[in-house]
Image (tube, rainbow, N blue to C red; front, side, top):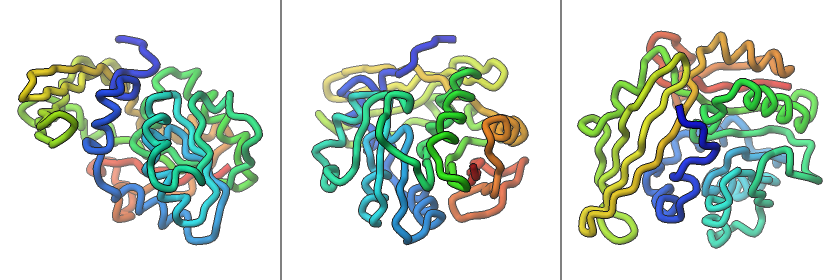
Length: 249
């Protein structure tokens, strides 16, 4: 499998401009906002992307630091309304200085699944644990491997048409390989009037609940709750599409 740290959908300005359109919807954000409550907290949004959730957190009165490896993603957020009240950092958590401790760390948009390497995953969890106050929370979600969502990652099942920069875009996913808990696939983008075709290759890791719990425990976390969907239903190993984790340091 390819080993690119940042794929083109996060690093190509043409694709970054489509990111918010492709990922429209706030069901996950609203769920996490409810979990965090209304008391102002000091929060870290790790893998913040184009900053939609970080801005929602700040609008609720939280003190927010937002981090993403992809500089193009951070650049895209700086002109958005309210961006000046969030501290933005392009780089890794290791390069973030003079920030924390945090009451909670969030990783939305399935960002946790981008931690495909064992060492990187464990270092990230330990680094997050080190930035949290005692009892602080790590909130994130993964797709449930038991329902094999990648089976629908083909043009016939995933094709969408969205208006975007330059006209209408056709967008779909194409599965390439499944090796153990790693899934590699392509994201295809076709600007139909101009026949501009762009492709971004991605890898995601699909860990089982038991594997997630072991990884978290090794970094000093205890799982406080598991949810199976954005309505707050309990996690069902056989049927839930999401594994939504509320872990405590």
